[in-house]
Amino acid sequence: MLRALPGAWARTDRRCDLKLARHHLDAAQQMFDRLGLVMGRAAALDSLGMVHHESGQNDRAIAILDESITLCRQAGQVVGLTKALCNLGQVKAMAGAAGRVDRTPHRGTVAGPPGR
Picture 1 (cartoon, rainbow, N blue to C red):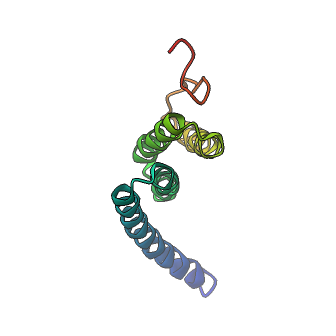
Picture 2 (picture 1 turned 90 degrees about the vertical axis):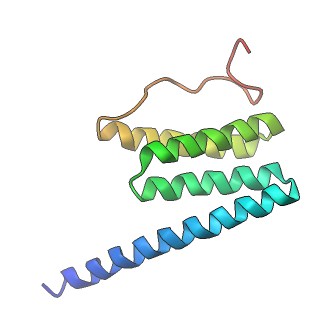
Picture 3 (picture 1 turned 120 degrees about the vertical axis):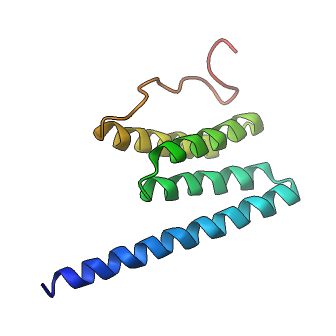
């Protein structure tokens, strides 16, 4: 019983940490929007997507990561695009383990999917 208590506290702290992370990332997005810093917004979205994933909200995480990927492609930012695509793959793999994944691959270059 005593061994379970630290785990219960860790779970409670983690929920609070994720809620606080969402709050800070939402504030960061607003700041980047006001400043017109597209890649700052893309980075905040990438992190926010992973926070939603950690919260078990995979559908929301995928939508947010897709937005980050779009911004990175529009800006021609390969490093940000690579990170966001890796995170999207991780979220889709985890969602797939739960039986809910769109297995459509994300193909293309920084400019977008082939044929565009």
